[in-house]
Image 1 (tube, rainbow, N blue to C red):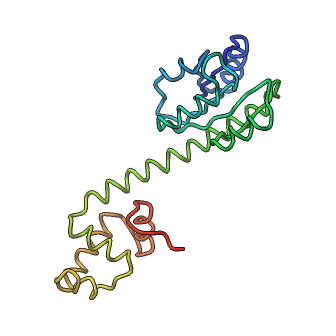
Image 2: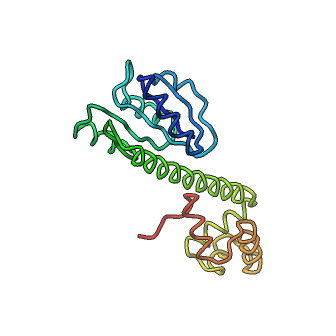
Image 3: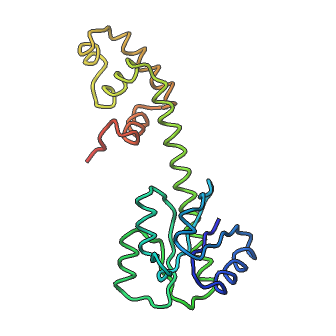
Length: 202
């Protein structure tokens, strides 16, 4: 879905027609307040945002969305663009900055790239949620053994630390690998890094 925030009704209409002509869903907003009252869809989304809005500016809205934890790729549009404004928007995470009037194909290309990036982000978030669910399915002892394994301890060292037998360590280790769906120790370490329970190597 493409979300368009611009206080120019004619431009909003023209952009809506353009995106609908290539099969994209569109939602139109005349102000930052209207967008903030909108329920963002659970689908790849891109925000096409005018820098100079009545009331809250586009840059202010960008900051507000970030504070609210709303992650959506933003492409800024402006008829009064200048270098400091562009730098501020890009530093704050904007995907692109298009000066009006822009070519339709340039706009479509920028939006397509932003939607693809959001789709990849969403896929990554889903995988991380699945990883967290797998980790939460471990027993406390399995989780403890997993943390020690990914920290580089050998089975006999873990057995000594936990005052259990090496056979028991192997059982817990095997259960942790199975529940985490890890096919190798390297994969288990990578999962632990993604979960934040193991520091990434320097």
